[in-house]
Image (cartoon, rainbow, N blue to C red; front, side, top):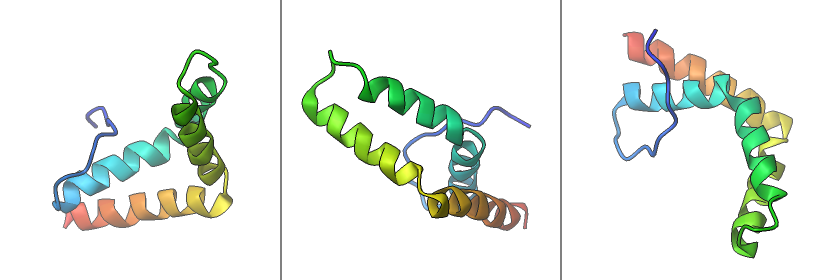
Length: 81
């Protein structure tokens, strides 16, 4: 399988959404770690730190983790059809 990369989805193609969702699902903990580093970096702008902490809070909710995994499976099945 090719390397998956998270990128902005500005396309309505299911395969694009499947790839992005799969990358998020598989790299969930890595994304959280990177966001944590940004949130703790006092050299960053206050607005960026605030937005990062909000993302971390949302990502720590179990329903978001479950939904990321769920949609990765569903969209990949649609992609295969």
